Length: 242
Image (cartoon, rainbow, N blue to C red):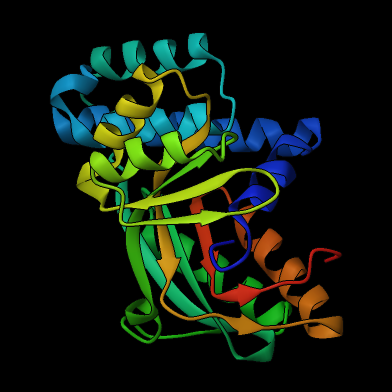
């Protein structure tokens, strides 16, 4: 959940049970195969969408063999293979929070019906295009366990826009186009990267707690569980205990 600590999100994903982990892996495999088809290449060096999809999959600990097999299957796919489209949806959650959803779908009618049903059942409302998108900006985000000045200097020198310190380490923000340059520079300098990927970052956050926070968590997880949904972002600032 953008707006809350990226470290908390990483911990939550790593702690997911086997069923949720399997579903998460399936979403990444679909994204990789769609990137191969849309980019016309199985080489991430010449296909930025594929490079982003692979980075996101690795950040969520998808095994390398699964990634390689997905690329091979997509390269060999012929007529009749599913044609997935990137479609985004926007809405509101408890406490006036904004929610931005990225999907990959071969049936838009099915996807919007599923998303609307979750919003209606879980105390949210589906908005129109543009209703909350203006509150989010696409960024590269790198999580680094090292908080040293040297690490910060390397990041800034190679294009980092902002650096936030926490108990876990550094959260480094970059323009989407500079993510890999900063990441590669840090890796070359010997710094261990916990995660690095393109994400949507809110321009402002909404503090939320108590029953509203619990309801929001249920809503966000229900949206994430939908097969066609790839990523769910909110501008909620949630307490650590939530």
